[in-house]
Length: 301
Image 1: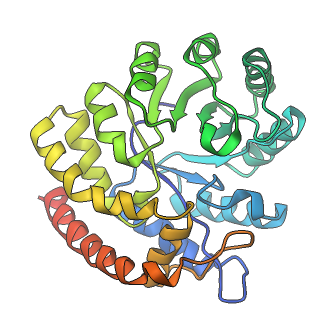
Image 2: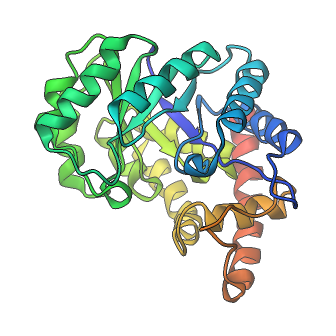
């Protein structure tokens, strides 16, 4: 399996009563397929995985696999604070038909670099699914260093890394590790274009939930080394990226999805977008419609 291009970290739609909205979920999945998204992540941090019950996790992943029907890879978020629980969840995802596991560095427990190596090797050795490493120190309190990644990339069951640190030096340190069997993926929308122009394989994107055509177009341009056009599109996308970071992810995203009739609200302790940001949400929603229409036309040409 080779991961590349525009990969969406899917939000989880809820009903007004707070239940999983499987109708909205199917429509969100179809929106991604229609928009050219090249892989999907179910139950990652954007999908509020920590707030999901096992039966809900199963339903989301089962419906995603059925809806996608093998057209693009489906990755399941399986990372937990303990290695045993991570292995259990990865087996669960494999049994439900996922193509790979996106495994975050164990949150809260703050393992050493040696502990990270042992953790990821244990998950990969178990063999339930290919593993994509996920480093997001702002959420986990743990930063997996490039030397640690280098020691893990040789494992035949470890297929790549999603690096969510936005600093250019980190990406430059990771890019030499890229091989045909080990993908380097940006986990930061705002700097993804820069990373892809430098040689990254793609981006695991929050923005592509609402901008599937535009993010696919951005990836095609950047990975095709069409730097001038890529920078122009990226400049138009930056206000959306900025808005998506105005409060904790996925709060702003959920506000935009609600305007598209793709779910209602979040689960505590996350709360809905502050009313002070509602006017900006309306402006951004209009910009998204314009960007999507323009990129849809270009991709269809």
